[in-house]
Length: 639
Image (cartoon, rainbow, N blue to C red; front, side):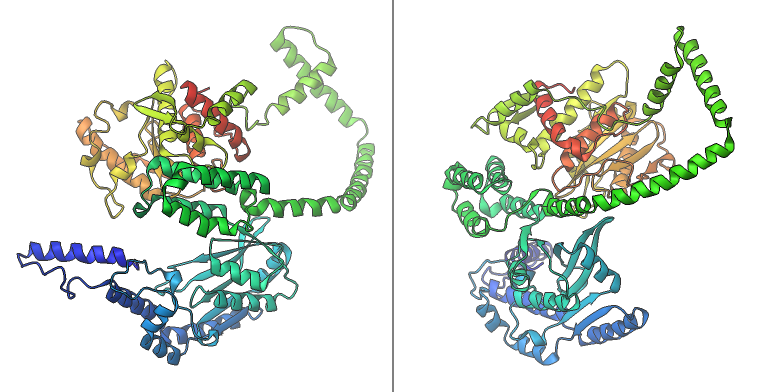
């Protein structure tokens, strides 16, 4: 915890609750011993961070560990520089001076947050802590796949407040780190120094593209070290930053205003050309939320519109890398075809020799097999067929074993697409589109189903209700019950454990879950959606996560809930030992390949599972699925 306003609230609550519970007289609000000023709290936070950054003992241990690593891997590259004790003492003496120099508030009335990334700049980079590592295999991967590089900073990985930077490339088997470095502070100087050392280790490394978080320090360091490389913002971190800012209470944005602002920002970010980007910026500046709120204008103008040259390609910039790979494959195609022809020619000669040696044996075998297929087809059809027709039928029979991944998906007609497009083109985001199940879908809710957008809870709850309605209307098939997106948060306590049945006892007052075949529980996990499925037939609880993560802890919480629900609804004993928790292969379900389709995936998981169908859709089907879901919500009918 480094936020000064938050710490002040915690201290105030602690004093009032603890002292009042002891029967003591509450201190005066101006008493600095119990109600310290922002200046005092910030200095304590800063000292705590400094204490967590410097440890001479651990630095010596790290130095010994590096010597051991060098013995086991002699080809690996290491750079290690300790933070000197002299510099540590100087920093502690001049805490307040450094804070003022770097724009930290030191007045008592200040309420600014003290973040890790705002740690004061160091006087000389030669005295700060720095650790860099790269082994031979990582160098090879960087040399081969180093055209497109991701720079990602991770925090709180150890007990020290030190940022860990990962240099990552996309290989043929996924993302792989090709270098790591830890610097004392996330400053332009420190990051640039580490990148320059990596550049010296890899003399032929000239990246074309860099993808990074929204960090001015990272951008300036990359611009200094690799001036010719194009920089791109990661769409996931960009979206994460937008959502966090719009949801902050101090910005005073309603739910509709949040959706409106996010919609405008997404349109600007996904603009295909500079002219269309200018049009979207003009639309944003003409919007009500922009004109109404000074906070919105200041945030948008100073944080995002000022960095328009740092554009964002589709698929987080990885399309560029894929295009380069395709071009290389096309250039190498003639030589590959030539080699393939030569290899095929040799195989044909060998096969011809083998056939010549065998004589007519194979011919008789093939003729016998064709006659058997002919007899089987005639007996099943009741008509006489030729040998040629039999061969065609056999070919079709074997081809039918290939699964078409999109065969279970409804088709999107031109009329359906036109109807959805007409609704989205309306200027009123509060226009009511569909009302049912005590839910109201407005145009701004339906707009979250546009490509590149995150689904909100209103759309997910409405779609799951349509699935449940379809199940109830069918005479045959699985009986499905869908819980709300707000169910699981109610089930949790503040520490993330099972809070007890009392918090949600009214949610199933009119339904008996134990008479259902499937119970679907949507899970909102911060910035990600997943689906928990309770299967009473197979007695399993599984989590379907389009990112491939396992959530066994969530499954155990739902099992505890079922035990409590059974005590109230049923007289018999609930045998929890017979239930299987979260045993699913990570490759058993379709996965998303971006950062914004998780909501659509859980809706289609629920759709397919509720019908007992295999999950045969893929990421490439999602754009069409989004439009079909819009039509289904408008007409309140799942195709």
